[in-house]
Amino acid sequence: MRKTKFLKLKLREASFIARALVSSRHPVLAHLIPMRRCNLACGYCNEYDHSSQPVPLNVVKNRIDKLAQLGTSIVTISGGEPMMHPQLDEIVQHIRLRGMIAGLISNGYYFTPDRIKRLNKAGLEYLQISIDNVEPDEVSRKSLRVLDKKLRYLSDYADFHVNINSVIGGGIKNPEDALAVARRAVELGFSATVGVIHDHDGTLKPLSEREKSIFQEVKKLGNKDHARLNWFQDSIAEGKPYKWRCRAGARYLYVCEDGLVHWCSQQRGYPGIPLEQYTMEDFDREYKTEKWCAPTCTLQCVHQVGILDNWRDPQKTPAEMAQERKSKEALNGILRTD
Ligand code: SF4
Ligand code: SF4
Image 1 (cartoon, rainbow, N blue to C red):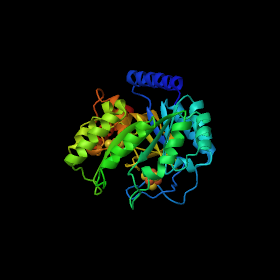
Image 2: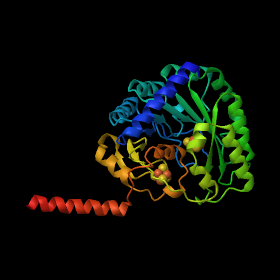
Image 3: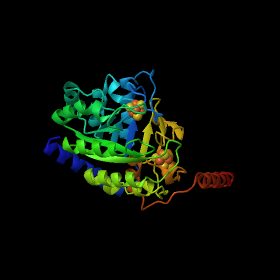
Image 4: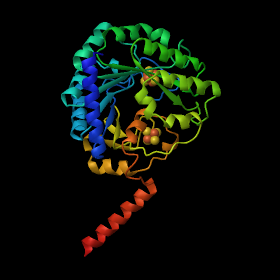
């Protein structure tokens, strides 16, 4: 990424952060899914199919318009594999046109010099690729050996920020792979982050001593901003729950291919309201609602958004929220009768 463009992006980010600190009443980050289909089938993933069609461009544009209307700062296009959407460039362009930061999460398979140049032109600002291992295996083909050529193309042609995320824990066979991935990322001029994941049965287990030391090494190598913001990972690495306020459904939105707003990719169905009908009343309710899954959550981006408001506005449990609603309704009933 050119230095001037990088500085401009950092300035824009700083102004969005300042705005988010001043006011808590707009979404900071939205993940938007224009394509549920994926070319891969990673063993741990519940976010893809092999048959769905791309969401039509005009529908995606309407969703972007609604996100802009809610005051969203960053829209990250995710999937499935969003590079399979035939009009991805127009989607990126539309996010930029509406004044929001445009990001993309991809498995990296479809990057060619031409495709990268088109994304430069469209105005893409961030790309994240997750690489799970060095050699492909039965669980994941998001592998350094398979993707290295694509990473070199990105290093040569991308005019957007590239972050390479590796993972550790969850029974990943060779924890050393995370270090190899991060080293290669830094060598190519990218930032590198590492995610700690749950065991395959969803439980939180402490990392082994070997995993912990690799985790610390990757953090040292990688993106310093992320390492500073991801201190929750130190608790997760120890197998301990972490206390924080998840603002999903408000400051963070996950908009699926059907246009429904969910807390996140792992809690689909809550609140499950169509984006076009999403109101500030929905926003306020979700902002105030304590999420039962928060103590063991490993979703880095939602944690980072949560930091902006962690110091203010304590949350209530869903039962307390329901009780509060009932009391309000009862009071309104009495006032109407009077
Ligand atoms: S590439 Fe991503 S979306 Fe596709 S199966 Fe793997 S983890 Fe899921
Ligand atoms: S705590 Fe984590 S898993 Fe639960 S809703 Fe928030 S982001 Fe999703």
